[in-house]
Amino acid sequence: MIVNAQTDTVLAKTPVRIGLVGCGRLAEFGYIPAFRRAAGVTLAGLADVNPTRCSDLAPQVPAYKTVQNLIEGGGVDAIIVSTPTRYHLADATAAAQAKLPALVEKPPGIDVREAEALARLLPRPWIAFNRRFDPDLARLQRQIGSEETLTVHLELHYRRNAWNPIDMQDDALLDLGPHLVDLARWLTACEVTSVQTRTLKPDYAEFELELERARATITCCCNRPYRERVDAWGMDGRPLGTYKRGGIVAGVVGKLLPRRENPLVQSLARQLELLSYAVRGVPSTQQLASVGDGVKAMTILEAVRRSARSGGSKHLVIYPHID
Image (cartoon, rainbow, N blue to C red; front, top):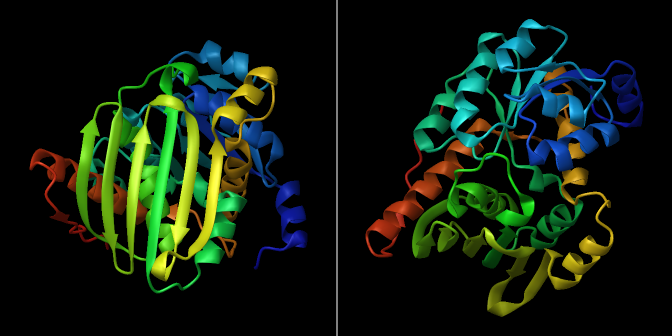
């Protein structure tokens, strides 16, 4: 069955029941409003160490303290893991043991070994690289097309104190790096072969990627005003396209209109719809990121750390084998 308007109507009548584990800021500003927008899914349960927070965010949805309690409560067809990174593997394992498909927020785990452990679970989880489903980034990917030689610059900054996460122990590389290295691979449709780190600090990372037919520079920071930007150039510096969000003007507008919808909602809603297709086995032209994509992202980040430890020398990226 191919996804079309008629398929969407059928799926909306019998939505996939999703359990969301973790009621932090991403749930509050992203997933819960995304559930209201997405077709084919319904939020059937929430779990958090503070069930009261779940009840405050979604009063009509059953709330539990643990993923196991949520699973035992029944009534869910799939799980989204949006807990702090150090709990991702355990929560995804609980879903797999219950034979429930899972979508795990980035990063897949605290290191590549945890990402590889996710890949050994059955059913295998998907990884929530939601920026693949931003329509403006999809347009940029089409503009890049099959360009033979590419230069790409990607940056993602935010002020963590402004986001006010409930539980965050990740450094900037682990917090923001997975999205950017996945975008570099996805936008260029080629693999990273080596990395070279310029700067690696707890709140800031800057590094270069060599890909099969491209070079990418990545910067990420968790103590600057919110800004996302991707620029792509072809051979001889010919501009191919730009994606940008945030910046000073957007920050001022956000303060004047604090109740407006978070930009994450649109891509998260589409990701939820694709999760419903995947759970039902419905083919789609867009695909969720695989656990293999997560392993590759974490392998690249590990090479960034190795390069930093060696004073910024170039390090080859050797991917572990995933069956």
